[in-house]
Length: 133
Image: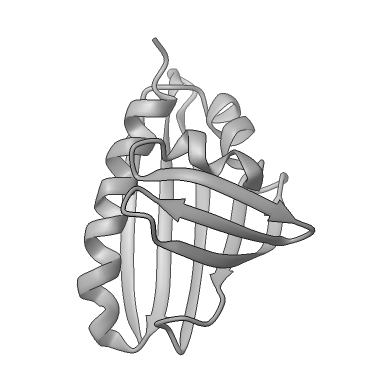
């Protein structure tokens, strides 16, 4: 099983970043530039990428206590794909900074050539779109 792990610094408070990430229907705004749309029905969402690709995902948990969202990609090009996004406060000395830890585990391993560049583009979009202005 392949893993893509990213630790993303964000120039915004953990509470503000979590407020944006905790809403699964808000994902197209958080990742604007990479995603162009989202549609939700119960715990299933369909995200549309900038190239027109639509992926179905199931939201597994929105964990407010740990500022963590878990989801899985349904069907398509993966045997298995599970990911988490977790907001981690930076430190009491830096209340306007935090990190987002994004971990994706998936099979087959060869999909890393697809997942890694999309994850990196998503990291840049997240930093840009959630930074305090």
